[in-house]
Image (tube, rainbow, N blue to C red; front, side):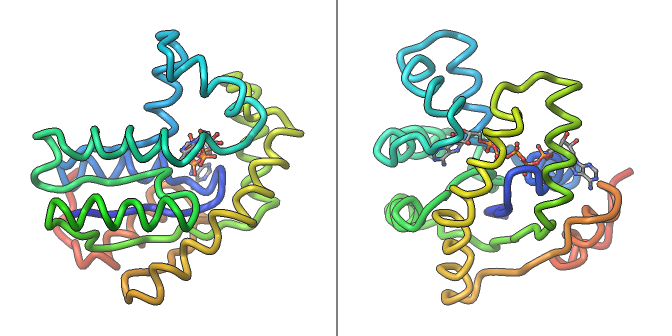
Length: 192
Ligand code: AP5
């Protein structure tokens, strides 16, 4: 089960990845989480990434390729993974293909979670109040949505051309969205 989740900021990638982990028992790899951990620890990567993330821009591709290659080479991904936040542009999609070709382990499924911008903005405004994530500030969210439309949205076409993409509606409750994803993966034996 090597699954890539795509979707705009706030579409629910992280939420669904965490729920899928419970069902599938494979690790959740989130580049956003890896970068925020590095920021908290104050590592060289964290220091480099901090201002970029807080502006709502993308961390450079070469840095991200190094992070993802290292993570995908660990033993815990032998049975698969849920990848969330990578790839984020066409160059990253090509890098991921090359890394996985070397490992002879191509992506199995790419799931795009579709939620309209009005709803994602509301969700991120709520999270800004509750959790205080700096890049959830209103102006930064607008910037993240622009970066998504310009750079990340074309990644869906990249995978559609390769016959790997399925789209799922991301509105409704978290459990409803999970059920949609599980049925498109043909998983009906649900762990409760
Ligand atoms: P990242 O952490 O990946 O942020 P993002 O893609 O903007 O994703 P979010 O975490 O905001 O949203 P999500 O779709 O995961 O939704 P979530 O489940 O959290 O990246 C942050 C930054 O790191 C980037 O801007 C960039 O700078 C850098 N970065 C990361 N990867 C990179 C890469 N590959 N290359 C370069 N730079 C990179 O849900 C959002 C909220 O909605 C939550 O509060 C949740 O509880 C709520 N929610 C979820 N589902 C529902 C639902 N069905 N109903 C109601 N509320 C819901």
